[in-house]
Amino acid sequence: MPTLFEIWELLVGLKEATESGFTRVERRFDGVEYRLSGVEHRLDGVERRLDSLDDRFTRLDDRFSDFQKVTNRLLSDHERRLARIERRRS
Image 1 (cartoon, rainbow, N blue to C red):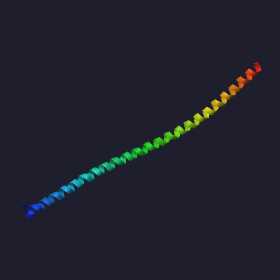
Image 2: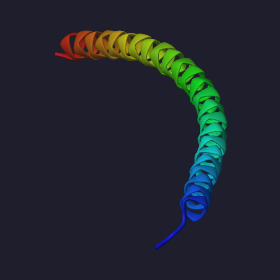
Image 3: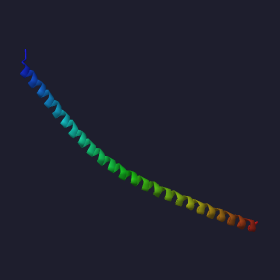
Image 4: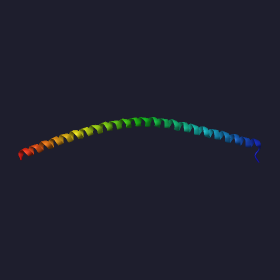
């Protein structure tokens, strides 16, 4: 049968081991929190770049739409001219 001193020593040892374990876990959580902060910072940068790309694609889409309008107008003008030339020949 263990003595009270041995039981006390066992309890003190368990307490110290538990506190030490919690300290290690807290340090790991601090490290994870620091890394997550870095990831969040990088994601903010990525989000800003994606927003910028979205704006650029919107401008390109607008330009392409304008280009299509001009091309369609020029094609219509050309077709009308060809129709007039064909009517003159007939």
